[in-house]
Image (tube, rainbow, N blue to C red; front, side, top):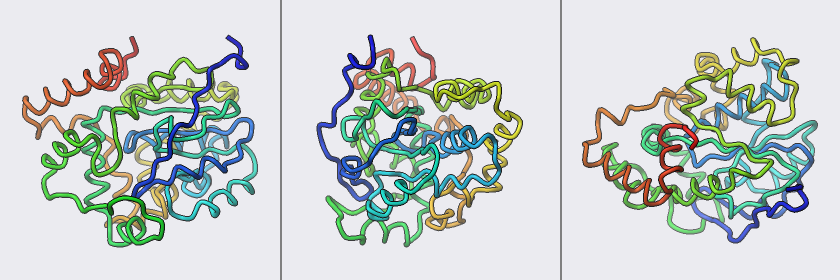
Length: 302
């Protein structure tokens, strides 16, 4: 099938909440080669942003990922600020989104990288992100004009309670999880969409980095791989967290080092009961189907 015959996804709704304003995509002017990094959240977004920044700049040590790769649909700062900055940006641009695919404008001119992660690992990372957020974070989300819907609440003291509420209320207090994952999964055959998985990035980062480079149309053999891999290592990103964390990490107690936290999987195993694990896995199969649920849990494609 030629790209002219491809049934490209269409935007069918807007999504507004304490974090998001999806209308910014209606005014974003795509360029050929733009890169859109998509995740639900806490799935390796910043890691893949760092990688793509390194790939596009051939391992340069001074790529300011936080400035160069904004979260486009975050409702602060105002959308005109982000759009004007991106319009002035030279070279190939890369942005991130946490929107479901039916709430953004999907362009044949861009390349999309969707990163998935087991929902239980997402929640364990999300809890640290949420529980360590400071008053400035809450003020930006809840007091900036234009809030639609309820304000962002503070999390409970128990991560177990946090997980069970997230599961029972489908991503609460952020945005729905299962439809988000399934929507991107169902489009995996599109010629300008690449699916990757946090577990695969952990298992064999050089392999996944090369796969992403080739998907972006880069000559992988011509790149400075030693520098790229060093600058994408956890230790390097932790040491230089202020250059990759939003606003230099100033929205979290402990600063940027809190935003770049542990990066490990499976921490939920020491906390969740067998019944809670079974309930999560049954929900995944019901909402995603067997193949997608298996991929979300393991990174293994059918």
